[in-house]
Amino acid sequence: MARDLTCIICPRGCHLHIDDNLNVTGNFCPRGAAYAKQEVLDPRRTLTTTVRCKSQLLEVCPVKTNAAMPKDKLFEAMKAVNEVTLTPPVHIGDIVIKDLCGTGVDLVATRDIEK
Amino acid sequence: METRDLVIIGGGSAGMAAAVAAYDKGIRDILILERTEFLGGILNQCIHNGFGLTHFKEELTGPEFLTRFVKQVQERGIEYKLHTNVVAVTKDKKVSYVNAKDGAITLQAKAIVMAAGCYERNAGAIGIPGERPAGVITAGQAQLYLNEYGYLVGKKVFILGSGDIGLIMARRMTLEGAKVLGVAELMPYSNGLNRNIQQCLIDFNIPLYLSHTVSKIIGKGKLEAIEISQVDEKFRPIPGTEKRFDVDTLLLSIGLIPNNDLLDKAGVAKSSTRGASVDEHMQSINAPGIFSCGNVLHVHDLVDYVVAEGAVAGEAAASYLQGTLKESEGPCLETVAGEGIGYVVPSRINLANAGENVELKFRVRKPSKNVYVTYSLNGQVLKKTLKPAIIPSEMEIARLPRNLLGEEGGTLTVSLLAKEEN
Image (cartoon, rainbow over all chains, first blue to last red; front, side):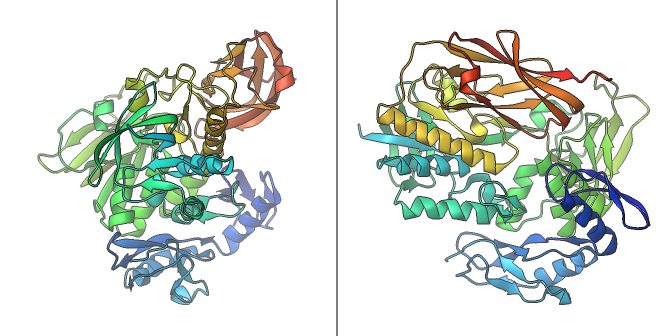
């Protein structure tokens, strides 16, 4: 299970190594060690994408998951996201899909669209 | 002719930050001229997250970041015109613009902040051999179509250049159902951040071909295929290394260039970045009252640094209008990009105007490990900083105490120096 990883927590991008006993080396800060453990046990990503929107100004509204979601569910989530159409007004933080694909995280709007 | 105190060209993050800073220093007559239908500039299409960690101490998407600045502009009642294209600027600060409502107007500005961003290098700039079919498009243009208009430009994609926009688009198009077959990078290292290589390419099993370039474009009318080749140390394709990919889209992520033509045509001196040559207050060295900030000055890696620079330019413009920025003929330091350094901003430090610390921004030419960055005044090393790792895709910022810089003027050189092994 030992793996070499690139830390994605900050732009520094440390090259990490994690062994079978979850010992992490190569990290510049503690966040790197936490990331490496998370990455081998339960890899997660924040999904940012768009949903259709019946706006006069934009065809789509940008959205994100309000926390990182399991990486292996990203494509399933994209299918659900592409079923949704929003109608303005939309505001930053509005929940677009609650509990996205059973992951426990919500999909929220990241742009104000008034009309 | 109408006279305005401060005209800001460009309503992106740099322009908005400059407007807010100038307002907060007491300037009330401010006009922002923005070409598109929205304030916010490039952040409108940057729907991914990672913005704001320095400025707002939280991780935001591009639209969330820009919305906070739009609110600051609107709360202050700062005037802005959208759909408004600036067509000319003069060194004596006349600004000509056109829009559908006002027609063609020339204003006399007392101060100008140039904040027009940057544009993408395109296929014409690198002369790719082969046909000229549709389907070859810059990564940022494809990002605009997808993230603001909901239009995916292709289904089978190859990407030339490993800049961050190309990497971000590799992930974005993959999530939207396109097949991204690979990314070719001319250099032996990636020009994108390590984290983007991981989360945009490795996460989706997209191969990165280092020391490769697109050596042929194939397709009549519409792109059908591309051929990539490995390159030698002089970046020439090596015969026999060709690989063919059947694709309908080639995205180009091959560099950004400051959109500084307006100032260039006006005779405002420019630096090696193609942005204006500026002093420590972001003021042009040969056009008093014309300030520059953001990607029109030099291409930044993080918007947090753009808004910080915008605030410096906006505050300096306010000081200029209020008569507190000295027009000094006194001694200056000219900055020099020495060994291993691509450029240094600002070009000049006016010692009479410099504050407690002088901020230098620069990029290195190639990735290096265990090197010193040295700062030398007229050949004498003032300071050296050890860097465990330093890469061209990250902008470096250094602060030098003003009292180190003396009073005589001369040159201030930034260089890389290899650390001697013990």
